[in-house]
Figure 1: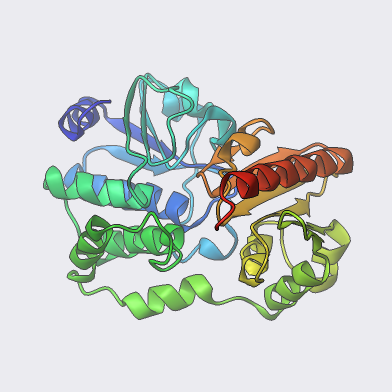
Figure 2: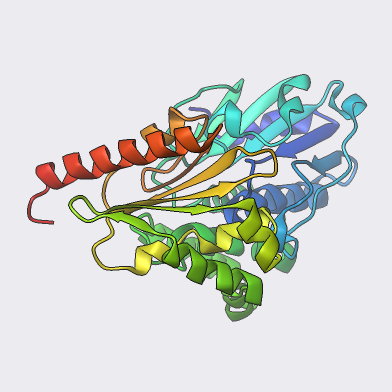
Length: 321
């Protein structure tokens, strides 16, 4: 693994820097990308620094929006990916058109696809790593930057509830809070949903199929469901955590149908590691929270059967949990 000093040294070499993050972005993907870009723009006003990815970021546009990036911008450019474990999850497949590629991430390092990388799976969020990078290298930090990074940390820690939250996470959050950001408003912005999203959360519970013997569960959301409720594909992620509130559910999948008939798969778990399952279906992520894709309903069923097996094995290995 490279050092922050080495990464900053490489940043100083390039006039154009293009930042990518993962598809179907969450607050950490947008926050880490935006926080780094905004800090570098202040530190190096003479450089061209751009953020790219699918333009529809759902209800996360308050954190950051994407820039218009042309193919010609990649000529002789430095490309940096944040919060993206493997190449299938990189948003905007032009990430390999630049001159040099850097990866900054906190997922398990399953795909060493970059020329230089800083990967720390013990960090709660990629935004935590970016905050450390800014602090160690004495780069600019203002409220706009802190807002993006704090949002990323809050999002990936479930408002500091998940196991990945450490004492260092709170130390980083305190540094960001010290800039004067409204942390209560950030938390509200992340947790607030539209009426359509709230109805979709209820629908995801109504549609749950639960294997009571293992605690595995599946909810399939169709395009017709989304259209009826007026919820976009990006906004559908608001229902992903809902099954986790139900006692007895150990791990679950929310499968959201896309416009082309394929499915976006959202894995969540309270115990069994599910990132390897996601990797086998064109995805990846954290041990307890991952994303993947399915080409049709048959693959969704296969994915669910795999989750049932994973939960069964976990219960056999942890009989007292």
